[in-house]
Length: 148
Ligand code: SF4
Image 1 (spheres, helix red, strand yellow):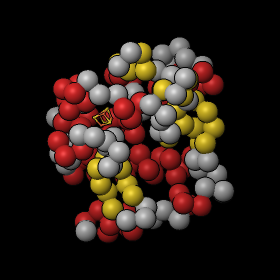
Image 2: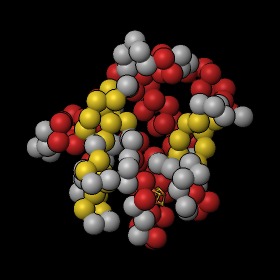
Image 3: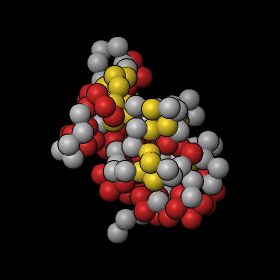
Image 4: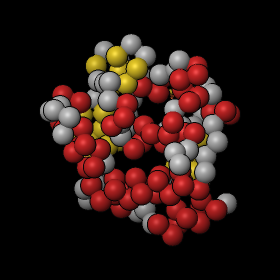
């Protein structure tokens, strides 16, 4: 069953699309391929980032945001599906991002945490030698932090 985070119930309830503005969402290779298959050219929706690709903003908002809706909602990137669940490197923990004004309303489950680990591992795979944060990433460390 899909978790409440992925269903986007809270976002829909509040008509919120705040995190789609000035997005810096990283894209895994699976995300990029999934969106390309819809007929979009990579450079139209993504730009190079330290860890591969990230969503591109047009006039301060995600390329795919139309009004308050995502044009590719069903096919959106993993990071967008899981947000506001994030991994905070400085705190060494999985948490709900303070930037989301409705974060208190979200519940996350162990399967969401597993998906976040999966996503970060994919990003790590895409990263170059200069991506120090991700090359230092360790699954064991991540799991240890996740249990705290
Ligand atoms: S900021 Fe929070 S409530 Fe708003 S769209 Fe993003 S995840 Fe949903």
